[in-house]
Length: 359
Image 1 (cartoon, rainbow, N blue to C red):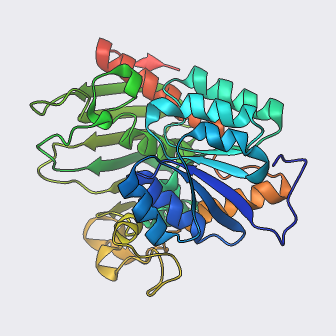
Image 2: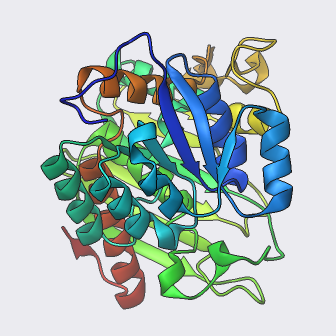
Image 3: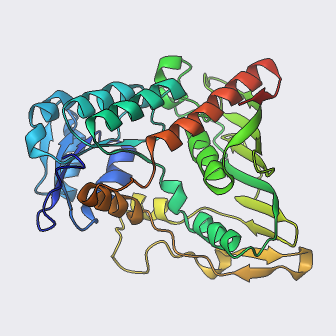
């Protein structure tokens, strides 16, 4: 379905989901199913165990063995969602767009900013939606921080610190920890995609990038402990940490401004809820953080708790559905994703050379 050929509002938009591993089963499928106006039509997986899991969770689902089967049925679908391994994102997104289908791609969109921009250009030529699943823009703590910044409660922000840290001393294996560049693995492309996207969303383009990146765990082949320092064009400095080797976790966010700071610990509850089988609209308020997890704002001992806004992952697919209906901008654009990948590329260059990279 193109932007110039919207489907009537009374008819649900039919979604084909490629991949039913953790990304597809824990994130995309339940969020699509919970979105009014979308219906999960077909899942691409040849794994019989995953098919059984999907059938139990989505009884009316159809299956395909390969993505090519979806392109052959392009007239029966309105959106393709790619939750497949990173190396497949560019070829599958290209094929979907060439088949005339709008696409949502799990992050990272591509392994290079050049490929990401080429996909953006293809989508524009075809008049099709292309968006990237940057769900961490709808984390509870991130939404709370955006509201604080909009109210200028910190004054002029000078430094932004953001972390995704874990203690996983034993590699789990698989393509995400592969040293093969074709797999687009490692924490820079995994957690770094979120951290960089959040920094650029809040503070605009980066002009300088410095990074340190290491492979620390025995048996690991991809970066598992990385730090990035950004200087934004507006003057804010962002310090971003991503690590699987952190035995003492730092704050999720520390943001320092001219009149005060905000510090927040812990993780948004939505991923844990989805992994536990909970669904938006069921039970307690979705995405709500307990008071014990609220961040604090102010100066040192005078800092006070700030109620966290609820996290809202469902907002992503609600915005995709709206964009498909009215032809508007998607919630995350391919060019925004390309800008973040350009920073990741510069970070890899900086870590390799030990020098700051100018964009």
